[in-house]
Amino acid sequence: MTAPTLPVPATEPNPGSRAARMALPRSVDVLRDIATEYGVCIRPVAMRRTDLDTGQTEVIDLPCGATREDKCPPCAKRNRRLRQAQIREGWHRSDEPLPGPEPATDEQKALVVLRAHYEFERDDAARRSLWDQVAELDDAIREVEEAIATEGLRGRVAPPHVVDDQDEESGKRRKRSTRRRQDAPDLPRRKVDPRTVGKVYTAPDGSTHQPSMWLTLTLDSHGPVLGDGTPVHPDRYDYRRAAWDAVHFPRLLDRFWQNLRRCEGWNVQYAGCVEPQRRLAPHAHFAIRGTIPRAVLRQVAAATYHQVWWPSVDVQRYTRERPPVWDEQAAAWVDPDTRAPLATWAEALDAIDQDPDAEPVHVVHFGAQVDARGVMPGTDDAERTIRYITKYITKQTGACHSIASDRQRRHLDRLWQQLQVTPCTDRCANWLLYGVQPKKAHGKLKPGRCKGKVHQRETLGIGGRRILISRDWSGKTLADHKYDARAWVRSLLGVTTDLADAGHADESGDRRHAWELARPDDPDVPPMAHRLLRAISERARWRSELLAAKDRAARGTPDVSATGGETTANGEE
Image (cartoon, rainbow, N blue to C red; front, side, top):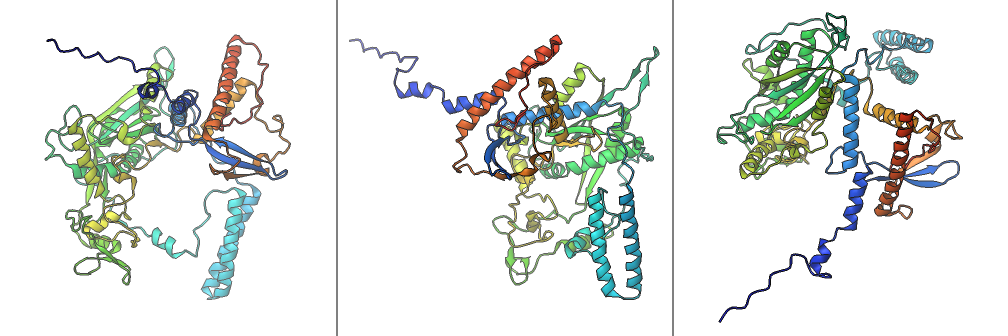
């Protein structure tokens, strides 16, 4: 007897079944995908604007401004385009981006002279011990300083005479020897010229060229690694040094640019990004304005180091399961068994200063791999390099490289475990694990559970800014580049940016409006889906008008349609 043949399951679910319903796309996901496709912020911030003259209120959605695509892809892509424009505008400049300061006005000079008279009178009153007059003159000096700042002068004319206790404590700085280490090569030191543009080369045919450079800096090796970034011998890999190098990598970069400027003799400008390598150690890509010999770059990188003069961390006296305890009466952290107070931060540093044979707790060096090459302006190579520098700025640090194998996961876990017990600053709670009270210690600290970004698994020890732009790169901030992009769009659409031409009755602009953050459950705030649908429609019309304006500009025909330049529901022009 032959067994009955089982029916072959259908490849498609039966209509009306649960499997068929689950195979249908969700309308909410489709809405978010369309919003992302049109560049609409998917997490808009609802702001209520109140007209102070009429009392009329209006809810306006502003972009969230996220820089990571896992939070808001449209805002992250918009930020990446702005960074690319910032790098592009400052990379191959042939003129200085920032002009010199304007001359002081007569009113500003008169205030400085008045400040000088008050300083003379105060010194005379202090010599004669007329402390009542000294107090009155201190108040007058404070008022003059405020008036000087109001007139538009930068900085202070002179430091204040009366200093708060907190400012006085933070103002104290320990002075250490600036003598270079014996194991570091010496560097030539020149007077830094204020120019920021590179050298111009003249070809035999008379044509001029002003190229720039692209540079990559990496950390020193912590042990041999395989192609997937994992160590060959995990037990011999120096995870402690890898964690300390990652935490203090920003200081090493600052020292490199300082040494390079002193060695070259001009104010070298840079723009770049910090990201992790496959071995999870940070490295940096930079665009440099002008050209520098590769031998000089390698020499400066080899001679650059950063010393960390902190208390010793060779012995971990406590653990997170058995930490020191806070004594309310003594207002200090004490040993859980002996109740003896731990050494304060000042005492620990004093011990280092008094020890003639003291060594820094850690020294950070660059690796031998220094990649540098020239880039000509206006070429495909320049655009490709800009895209490469900004490739990972929209991603979280831990998401730059995929962790696929168990070996990679164990490597990440070992590094993270070391980062959890590595002190990040002089106020880090992890100092309690090594028997030292951090600076300005208090009872809310949790030893081994510092909230600093460098201790998180997602940051891999890179807790600071990942985008590094020198001060004189383009002469503009990111907000200035955003304004330039909007001005270009308005000019293309034929919309004026002047308040009077735009039909604003009040020349003061938004000064007659009051802004406040609207709550999602407020009755005048529509549901999120309604706000996204409205923003998608406005963005679609705006995109059609922009494409039509581009076609008219390409044909050379005048623009006859202007939108009026009103703000959309997503805060875009």
